[in-house]
Image (cartoon, rainbow over all chains, first blue to last red; front, side, top):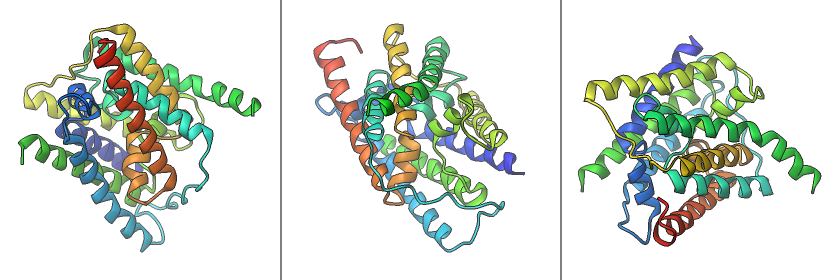
Length: 141
Length: 140
């Protein structure tokens, strides 16, 4: 049952990414391109998603547990670290270069062609490189 | 209001509903990079749930796009740029423990400081990168 709802959430997420234009790299780069022909669509996407999730967090706060059992995720640590900042900068650079972030890269797999598949493979390789890089950064203080 | 903005708001609402469903039913944070990253490097638990989410993420829009008559990502044809961008997105999101969906959608909506800081830095880095790569170097 948990897997069925997870499948449904993934499907809804992917459909939302396509409807909103997030799987179109031109729209994403257009949003980041503040000195070009700026496209404000992504502000509406983020606004719509954050607005619904704001309500969801309120509902979660009034409940003891998720509907399918288990626990709600713990509140994140307020600690800001170097990895958070460095990682977000690297992610932003890649996002700006190609116009794809992880969700849309996977959602568009079936119509993204060879380039989309190549991006996904490189992204997974980058993800596998993260644990050693993280360990290296930790030892260097 | 242009249709594209309305579609953005509608699609964003669907993204929010998906995240709300994953939180209120499964009790999980809907972060794309965390869900796939925890699966590929073996660090995350509840593997079948992750796999089911990812299957839905690929199949759901895949079916809808076929019914709608196709879609286009307009991804650059420069494969060097594609590989570099993919590596940066993969490494960066795992170092930062989140991407646009986890830090952005789920983090901002619960007023997470980490979410705000991550979102500020990836938006800034993305903007600077587009200015450099498009307007100065002309590679994208």
